[in-house]
Length: 134
Image (cartoon, rainbow, N blue to C red; front, side, top):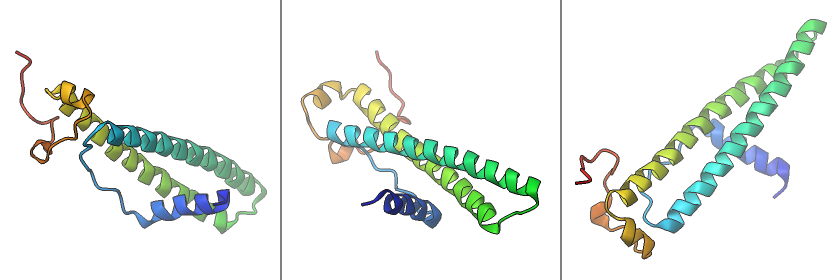
């Protein structure tokens, strides 16, 4: 894939507005994958914010010269939508990671270290369960 096609896919995904679903992470491999996804989303957001700044500077220069281009305005709007979309995606992935960590430290630390996969019965949101250490 070329950089252009990757960028187009990133934009098309964001403009579709369809977010990933919250899924329970079941083992350390899933956690590792979620951490990689989170890193990728952060990089996308950083790139989109830089692109927005560049496009905004271009728009301001065009306004000063009284030569506005509607395509720049549309691009700014699309980039704003994409930034909001990936911000929401980041929140979903962070929720998945935080929930898995709550599961691990909620009494499943040894099972996790032994490489066991999370059982179906444990697929509840451990962040919301009442529990005590002692």
